[in-house]
Image (tube, rainbow, N blue to C red; front, top):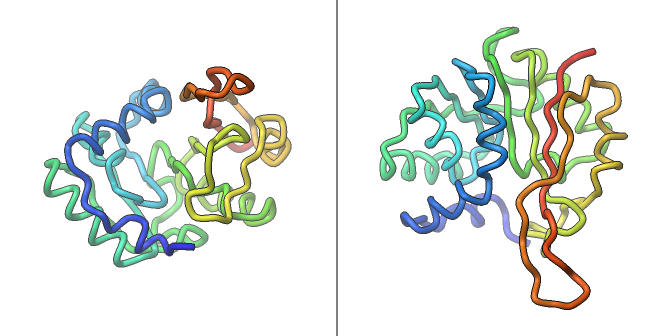
Amino acid sequence: METWSEYYTDEIGIDGYIRNLYGQKDFLVAITADKPAKILEVGAGTGTMSIFLSQLDTEVTTLDNDPVVLVAAEHNKQRFNGGNTLVAGDAFKLPFPDHSFDVVFHQGLLEHFSDQDIRQLLNEHLRVAPVVWLSVPNQFYPRRDKGDERLLDSATWEGILSPYRIEISKNYSRKFFPKWYLPRVHVQYMAKISSR
């Protein structure tokens, strides 16, 4: 099993940048629908989503707890002319005052945690923004990238998210599998939540 430092240190080219964005097209469109002015991404990954959102005249902050991941995300930011700010910090204890952002989002974060930890994370994220957008691979996702992912269906996620007001809950990102028993299916789940 790779660490996130190992997983995200490979340089991405323009092809990888566009592929990352295209795979998250529906999620990015949903995040930007309400025209948020200040966005926080928790879990930098390659940084491509924050880079893209920062090019839409939006103030974007990208947080991660791994310094190696932040260095790689900074490299991608420079390469693709991003305007986002990178910050080291803990997703469970964000280094920001209450109500600092319009939206918090993360993609590929929550599936690595227990239900209790997920709710602890979401409570903290809702402390700094009124809305959280989350995206995770669902039960049809073809692999475990790191190995500890919980690949759950949307009904299970809705149960986990039940303490919150679920404004949007849906699967997205269609993929075709060349096996007769797996038709074209959505391989990711997204939700928009707020406090009750």
